[in-house]
View 1: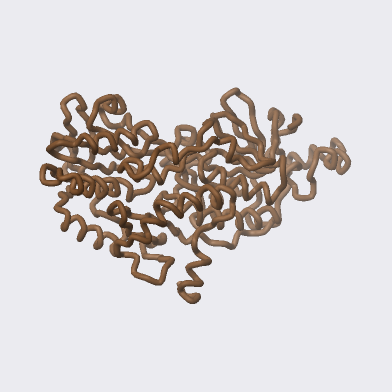
View 2: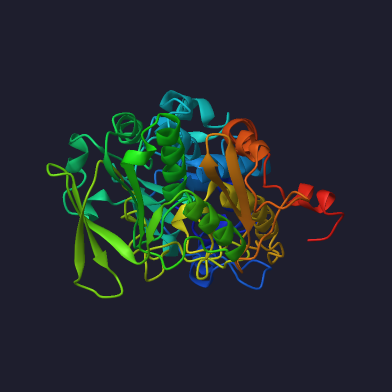
Length: 465
């Protein structure tokens, strides 16, 4: 890209598409007036615009983050605005399909199957800026990257994901240097889960859920069910005491699926302790310390033979206290349109947002379809009309060949795709989780062609929700 201004008002005007057109259309005095007055779009919420002169690069659409949301939206935006006009900012050279790590931790898949190079996934015609974002300046339509350079944009999509915060548990992450402890939430620790399960001899198998938002809220249980079945199949179950210590007050947020899971838990003799939050791991002693959230300050020490840690999580550091974030550090969006509440040319998708739904790849897929339509209208100067209903899905793996496919909306009401009772364990849903969903992810979602199952749901339910 050549040197361009950092998206001042006149550059954002739909009527002016290039530096050359701007030069022809206005003289110096006219441009000065435009810079002071601003150019408003035809929508009910005008794009937020001010002058800026320092940026080295400018793109019509800048996507921050090269995870699932970022790659998906870059593919969609490239088709919308054309090659050379979209950039993705992402420092990582490797991209992971993280939902499969549940099965990696249970020994059913290999971690290598989850990885592909970022370069192989960036759509042709989209610029990959291999860098970290260091700051947002939405008032000037710029972001700063790690070399001090500024990138200007007409539209910004934030897809930064969620940050793992192992360090918020005393004794972690250094505790992973010891055996008997793992976590399916990191590529660095997921194989340690499988190792701990294989090496299990006798004692407590403990699984945790933190007192923070998490991605894939069902995953802390999934590995527990796999581990329980593995120990049964290997003749070790009678020597194992399964414990699920969760900071939540319920086993799952949707009653239909919670009832099904509680039945499984009872049948498999698993102990559940609600409102118990992991605060310390003494890996050298194989001890885990939990706080009773209903009685702050009260703690209990558990010895473990196996410990699976779901880490605390939070928004990426660059979002915290930024202009685009809410008080909690999450991208502050309209929950239906995915448009920023203050800056109409800023949008968000996925785990980094404050959308009140579960943070899953399925949610992201549904969001991508809505966000695509939202941006189409905003780019035409019209108000967004498509509405995201909070759809999310969690394939609750309850065994090596069994899954309960939970699907629900913002109201925690089931929003099921298939005309069957999805509250039951099914082998077909396991194959969907293990085989079909990875195919959809790599070949449809990341290429911008999969926007969730909503169209198929209408067909299967004869047009009824």
